[in-house]
Length: 345
Image (cartoon, rainbow, N blue to C red; front, side):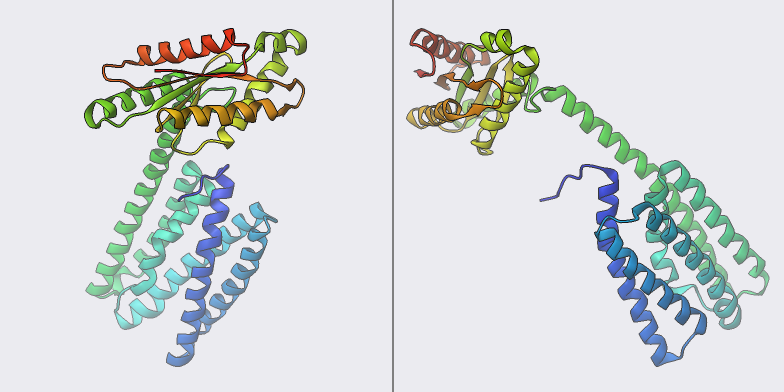
């Protein structure tokens, strides 16, 4: 399962930690192959320098030390490596042997991605264009002495580079739009205080459950509960402590539920659990949760209790009919002395 990262920096660090070892292995492999095929002094020197520096960088990134310095120093080194390697490939291989750029193109998308990852969308675009124009000028200078194969390889490189820059630039906007939509969804469907589902999302869950019940007879139950004498908590400790109690209660209940039991805040001190169980099994779940609340000591408010109304789906049910029965169960609890579970068929 994919992990959700709390910040962009943490995501970038994780990407670096996975990518850098692959780059180091590639650089070392390239160096070892040169020893077999004949050493190119320039490649040999820069490969070893980069390998050592990337290993050091990986260690500091793992420890989350000097992260920004490492980002920009690696940006400078990668840019220098990219430009000088391109120039060396054009001048010493393509001009002399009339060949193509070879595996140089393979790493171009990663290098361009690194520019955007380090500098962000706007600065990454400008920086990528500057590097592109630098290599473009270097290639044009030798264009008149290149073979047709070399010119074709150079042209493919330039067009591909532009495509990568454009795609990555707009991809950043796509990801940002997606992130904004996710944020909107989070605010639209989740309670701002307790961070659990709000009434809007609960309605959607109930509609889906009712449809599944009509189509496939997949029964379900709902547990409607609230805190007993919650008004006295607000009166005695203030609304701030009352809010803290609601947050603490939401975390407490959520800790004792599984993914089979969607859980949300209906409003005020009222909460709803949707369970795939039915009958006595749901009553037992509600009773277990009642005991959990009763045995819990809230940080400021101390010991509190909750009442639970339980009902299960029936043919012809609507959201209103379900909630009315559950609310009736909750009402019965209040008249039975509270801290109780009532099941309404």
